[in-house]
Length: 359
Length: 170
Image (spheres, rainbow over the protein chains, first blue to last red):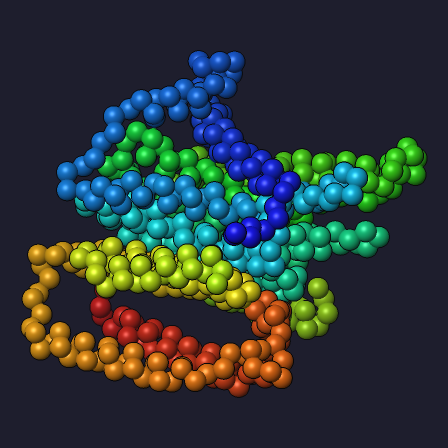
């Protein structure tokens, strides 16, 4: 008999997180069009359903009913594996993100988090570093020079920006002293103490992480792997139907996950200002029990975290429709000669501030 | 034996054989990545979370990406592969066989910590904090020496890749 860990009700949380990631990614495609239309002073999608809200469904139907095309000389197995890998790695990282504090029903305590491990940050970093395989394998298996160039660009870009990203995470690790994302969140707000979010302690680290997040998710101004002016469609030139859909979709899941990570690491996660005062107000003035007051605060915190995530997603789209694309040598120069030295400087600075007891 | 251990070992051996026997070098690299994943699974079974995560980040996430990168550029195909002389094959087999012999000879007599009576064993040693304490107290000198070695390697790589005076790449 195989002993599986006793997940029980926790599996419901995992399923909800999985479904939410997909739902949010679906509506990101809609939000992208609406925001693009807003920024360019156009109307945007408004045909399918009220305010065009059914547009993602219409897109899905279109994607599914298109022709499944395999280019000649393509490696059939890897051609299918590529988009699958892109999607799997995109969905895996949301497992360790704490979407809320604990909920208690009777004697049962739930964590609004897929799994709580003490290597949460390493897990995120590991899965993000695997994300490039989907693009590389798909681009290579297409047997097309443009796809291959896109894949190679994606690989070198991800490797370059991963370094700066990892080093900006190390600075967060130095001030928190733990790799668990839940612990990092809880440290940013302690009852009865004056605590600030990590963004105040790590402004430079956050900026480095943000830039690297754009590069890791292949978003403009770093979307060189799918640069249509040079490479037709980049790594997904040969893809059609839902296989293309999976590639485009995984990009939005990645944006959602990386926004959640940024909210958790730098913007207090599920904490919001005056949460303990609000809880005590419910207990003392309204006569609520501690458990139900805590549950309400947890729910409000989850809503707050999602508001932060949506703000970041909007920021991603805002940047995409505002800034032009980098040239490839500019991208490499920014990564290696600006971001990495800045990240090293940030680590030294953080160390000095900790040593002198400032943070 | 634990069924999960058996399954992971089976996949590990199968994918390791796949690395050697695959005709296409890209398939070999992908099999090698799968092998690293199963090894990380083994680390998890040994309660070594940190090692498992770092194995994925460093080997599967960084080194193998560069491997794949180079192999995609080289465009090695079965028909372009040069025919190796029989002498080279025999030499490779002898060298590999003697490496196996040495490894088996070196490892056959070791006693795992905690199995022999009287040796203290800490089941939490694979956790990040415990591992960090161990590395920075008992093994401080080798740890720091290894970091100096990495620094030398980095400086060497920069020296080799440095642009000569007057040379332009763009």
